[in-house]
Image 1 (cartoon, rainbow, N blue to C red):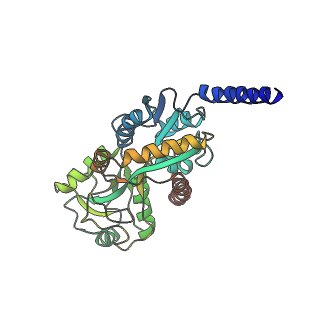
Image 2: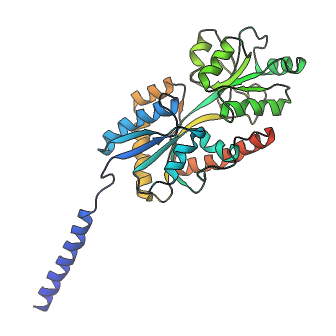
Image 3: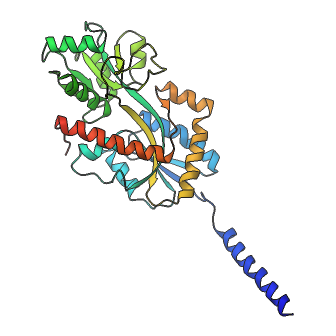
Length: 323
């Protein structure tokens, strides 16, 4: 009889525990907010919406895009950093995430401690371009031209502290060029300035330049990727042009607030990697001028450390600061 009561007690205990586990909601149990720290319509927003739509389907919960633009992305990134670490806030960032720590005197997040990396989804190299009237047809020719004509040639860029802007500064420092960078309020105006020959040279992220390069309105001199881009296979890399250490791109990555359970991070990573492997998603992202990266959380964490340190040296060397 004692054995029978003991057995019943064990069964009841297991039932209670099992019932308790069954009552715990499985992630996700409610809609997820996906913060984009930029205005709608830009490449980060477009890629975020492509992924959010598919993530809603695979997680069986709505993923709502929340655009929080301002201060070079700092406003949205700060909101995400201070959100509950429960997996219901996701952040999609561009390269401002790794540049802003050295560019601004104060930012609302710590690039190493505020977030758990999920993946770098995709990246686009920057491209050095010239108006067709510029005699130089390569980076070595451009360096000789600029050195022979101090202060005559300048670079249009999408804005102070953007990776294209810093790529132009890095080239200036490396080749000791007497040029200035002319920051515009975005890639569109910068591209238009070079097409109109208001500024003869430019450095921008690749996506907005591709149709103008293909149409002959811009001449591509080199890309800042480690290997040639499938979007512009005839354009050499900076390393092929004879300048090493110039690699730079515009990343499109996913993070969650620090403290989110590891199982949730792994779930999000797995779902996003599956989404990025879909043919229609690949076609859409590659069509924007990006290469699929789909890195692991540890790979992305290592990239964050490398890029924060790299751009800090460039910003410090150029004396750039945004208050």
